[in-house]
Image (cartoon, rainbow, N blue to C red; front, side, top):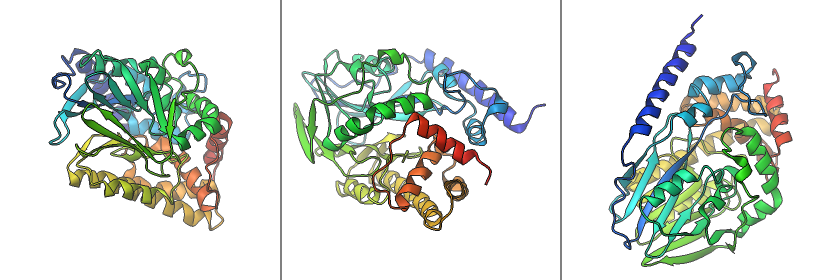
Amino acid sequence: MSTPATNVNRAALVALASLAVMAQASPARAGAFNMAEGEGQIIVASSFSGANQSFDLDGKLRSTNRFSKFETTALLQYGFTDWLTLIAKPSFVATSLGGAPGVYSAIGNGAIETRSSSMFIVNDADVFLVDTNITPEATRRLVNDIRTVTDKPIKYVVLTHYHAVRVLGASGYEPQHIICSEATREMIVERGAQDYKSELQRFPRLFQAAETIPGLTWPTITFKDRMSIWLGKVQVDIIHAGRGHTKGDTIVWLPEERVLFSGDLVEYGATPYCGDAHYKDWPATLQKLRDLHPEALVPGRGDALVGEQAVEEGIAGTQAFLSDLYKAVSANATGGQSLKEAYDKAMAALQPRYGNWVIFEHCMPFNVSRAYDEAKGLDHPRIWTAERDIEMWGALEKSA
């Protein structure tokens, strides 16, 4: 018997299949990358990860009647999961970032994904890259896009923070240097291996050719507060902004162009992942971004924001989500209620306003778990392991 939800899913499949055909047939996807070499081109690109909620830990597709209610909700929200994302290969549309000469945003088109953005700066000698991808195999799309602009080597890779899905593809760019904050390196030492196993379990189909990952991604250069690199005439400030999404959050700031790459401190139309967050510190860190007065901001996920009003909308939206979530969870955590009760009430409170944001259903269990811990006085986020993931889902699936 066909249900409305089933019809929606079928419609989503047809739409995604159409997107796949259009993406594969789309000509010259980097057609707007037409700056002359040597003019300090800045290119922002987007890669893709799916909301993987329907696979067993060994990567086998589950039957619908075996989904937990959390997975069922995610399936109905997104229509399908990452295996369809891989069919609907994204195209890239480049647009100018405000009035800054040579600054471009290339955000990929797709229906079921988290938009993990990267930024490139091409100068006379080499390429500067901010944030990588999930595996060396997955980096090929971004490398191919860079090669439509230049054949110069990728000299620098900056990690805005440490999460496996953001950094394990770094070797695919063959950079001379990998840069991150000292606090981010501490996270790699403390929890890098566990985070890799945890995220591989969450997203088995997204780790394309996981065997090509040579190991954890280690920096060759670290800094405490900030450092600057000159790429020809372009000044690039790399700043440890403070604790928020993680304890090592780094932003990349181009003061002359007034372009800011925020990493996952800011998301736009996508749910912030807060599993390793510092909720109480995050607003003050966001204020530091505001104080720069950027005229264009590239969030960790979502469209590039051009103009002061759009930039503020992106920052304010992220801050509102964090405030609403922490308020909902902390009231229950300090009141002696269980994680399950706190989760149910937080979902009820946030679903109406944020439920349509990308990966909302996936992020909320991790977000609530961390908020619950912080509200109970645990300042240092607990390490996510493959075993802890399973324990958390089990706790949240129990009947109240």
